[in-house]
Length: 160
Image (cartoon, rainbow, N blue to C red; front, side, top):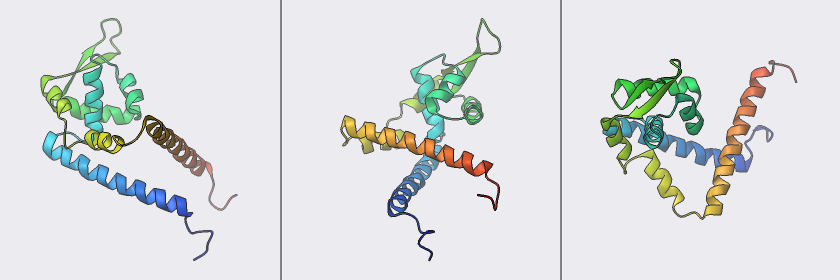
């Protein structure tokens, strides 16, 4: 194998760990659908709405760090399942505010068997400084992924 094509040891190690975690995240999210009726991302949005009743969709997208179009699908499914309700803003009919229904609150209050519970368990042994380091790395990795995606999208095949 050409050594320039082999992954750097740190990249291979961390990507393997990340992909392993992502696989487990997806498996637990699928289990959550069976047990709670929502995926991990849907529950995260549900918890944000439960924490801040009346929150706007744009504020949820920012807090959850999801694209507005992704959030639209999540909110649609939560609404179809009767877990969130939407009310129109009295001052601006184009805006709506979201609240959690009684059924939605029951799902939001579930404490075990969730992605969130696993995240909290994994962070419990870390100091505040270690948690901050993990958060900084995850944010930096997200930025680097976006930069690579953007760079690859603008490159032409066969050109340097």
